[in-house]
Image (cartoon, rainbow, N blue to C red; front, top):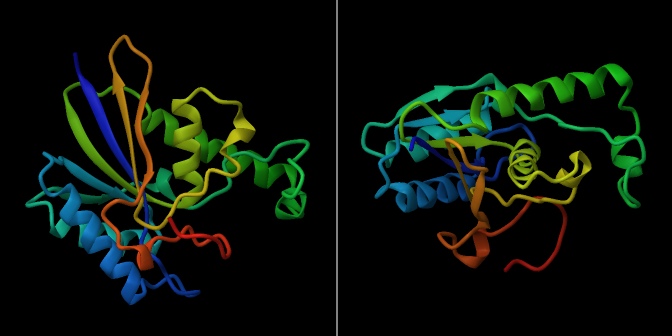
Length: 195
């Protein structure tokens, strides 16, 4: 049975200009070290600089895994609900129908490309952003579309999803920061307790 093993991660911490910070580079190094024992075939990354740079650092620790761009991993809002949950209405202010449709098309393309079994056993790292990572988790759990909201992914936290022929998807880990020391554990979404 062919299994696609996806290791979904949000890029390392970045500054307001999209460049990795020192903390973001260290987060990426530590994740690469954690993934090094795995037989990773490819590291796919978003076209955005913070994801590309994180992927290069991670891939450098993986002994020859190809590092490639995948447009479907770009940062985007995957779904705009008609009635946002309380506390989220302001977030969606300004999203018109065309922007919402474009985000949904990107989300559908992401799922078509990666959220399915492969022809052979594969181990792929996806270096993306918080919202596409949340969308993949929501999809793997077959949760309602609006459920991606509130799935806050920390920088370089590890989410593992498996897809097998003839079986549903399995979420093995979500937002695992075990490779990061406490001072590098952060979602980037406001102040809060860092586990």
